Amino acid sequence: MACVIRCSRGQKICCAVTTIVIILLLVTLVVLFLTVFKPKDPIIIIQPVKLERLDSVFFPVIELNVTLGIVATVKNRNHGSFTYQDSTASVNYRGNLVGEAPINGDTVPDHGELNVRTSLTLQVDELLKNKNFLDDFNSGVVNLTSSNTLQGEVKILKLFKKEATSLSNCDISVFIKNKTINSTCQNTLKF
Image (cartoon, rainbow, N blue to C red; front, side):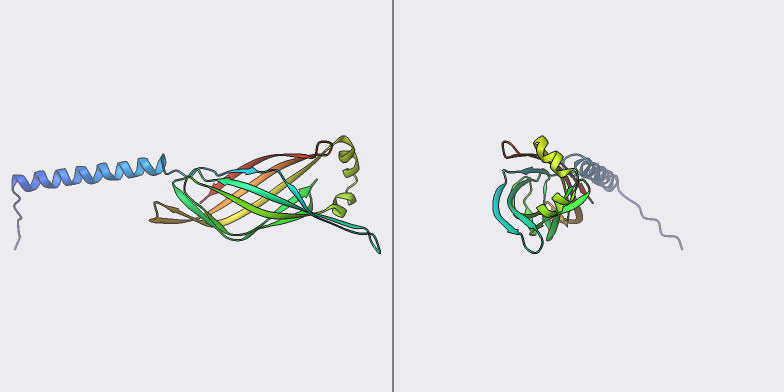
């Protein structure tokens, strides 16, 4: 037995309007997620560095370690907050590891800034082992590279959660004569 459902003209118009509204809503959401809510890379600005500690041992082996206080401002340009876990930033000189800085987990609010404070222990004895260090030091500029990876989660509109990784690579130039530091960082956010 076949059952035929008969719709009135008003029901057909209501279904058509509802379908059009749903399609427009979906298109609007897709456009928003591809433009306004599209993830943007964070901006990291390294503030002036201060000397926190200087340790030296001359016997039985010469060791010299310097601890620098670093404040980095992280600017989140996204419509979602980024919560990241504890991590470590590594500092290299001509491909050799010369220091590490712990980074404590925190949350960067949407369209907000966060000052990340850390201490970098620079192992000067490792720098001195490199045959190019004295030439660089005498020229007045020592170039270092820094890299770190922050694993975390992005919350968009406090509704959607997505795993994310923030990668940061910085070129750091230490100017010996005027005791200043210049850094240029490239940051990416991957989902």
